[in-house]
Length: 230
Ligand SMILES: [Zn+2]
Image (tube, rainbow, N blue to C red; front, side, top):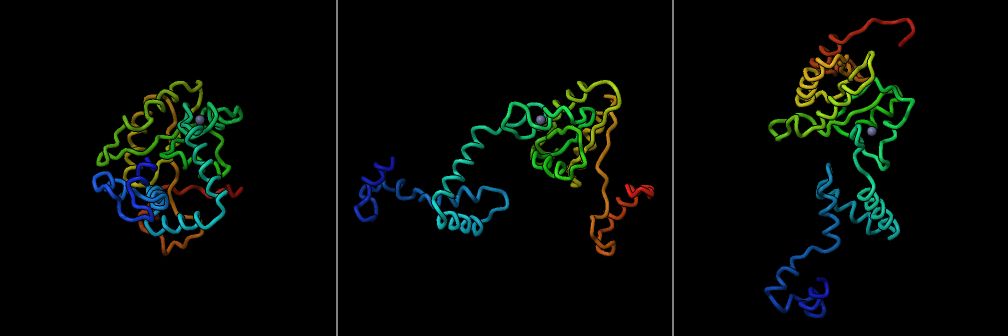
């Protein structure tokens, strides 16, 4: 293809000699444009940031670009959703699911796989996870069938007898709320305790600057002050 393109152009980079075939070749994006185009497809990356990143890569050592390309290729080849919880992993089963020290009677449900890391980093949760792969959003065409809800019901049904809990850690958005309400109703008949993450005042913030809804949520979710500081 590239050879064809070169043949259709004048030596020295002038316009193509054969207008028909050349038109397509001429409008082909350069490798640099291809890179910025791909970067722009990433979330949170606009045209300016894509350009800055592309220039940063091109300016730096070629080995850095090759290392990035190798990392991307490896992710494409080896990373896949864990068949049990939906978190991404490169082994057959993810490290959380195959860790025997985790509490198998508690499942924390999150919308996206990257939220698993947010909870893991707290070091305060020893149960298992379940990644929904999104949240209910009828306007965007996301219904229960599009999320990994059936698998969650299966997992809860397969849990050992005894006290079990599902923590709904969906986001505090309208869709996140709707998803939690839907799951709560779905799981209720399964003899499982269904809880939600508490909502309230962010750590380090002044009450004066917190919005009314958050203060109301914090009031509703207040708890007794214990002497042990827990
Ligand atoms: Zn897993």
